[in-house]
Image (tube, rainbow, N blue to C red; front, side):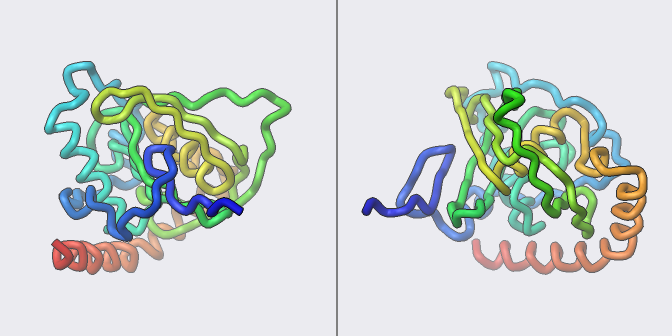
Length: 216
């Protein structure tokens, strides 16, 4: 039998990938924005043609990976480090044990045909709502289309938890948070728990930042 795919980078199967992504080792772990900050509530600006392939865009992707690693996240959007651009990164396992790693610029989430939409309820959290995870229903399949940092076309498909990640990060770039999809009671619960848990979360992030610095 053929070997089961274990890692997919930019949507393509590879034999292996470092546990700590090289992007994270190159990048600077910038501060993660928190619910209430205006940059999280605006639709992000498109990456322009001049920005594809630029050192600044490559640096942004590296910094996003570093911030994601420090915060123990599976995905991170540019506005979560205060940058108003349509870009997000991911380092996420799915239910089959496949690790997905990559980045995408100017992503557009495909509209799923009604018959292809199977909603699955699962715990979801957010690095910009530090601490709580609450149950939220989302489709178990997602396809995003965009471009890589050099401007090449890119299509990424996810299932299960990775599909949830792709949808969650696309929401961010449209100015949305997962708590917007909760009931009013659920949103109040998430914000209350965030206040209770955020100090511990920030302490873990500070320790992880020191760990990342030591790895360089």
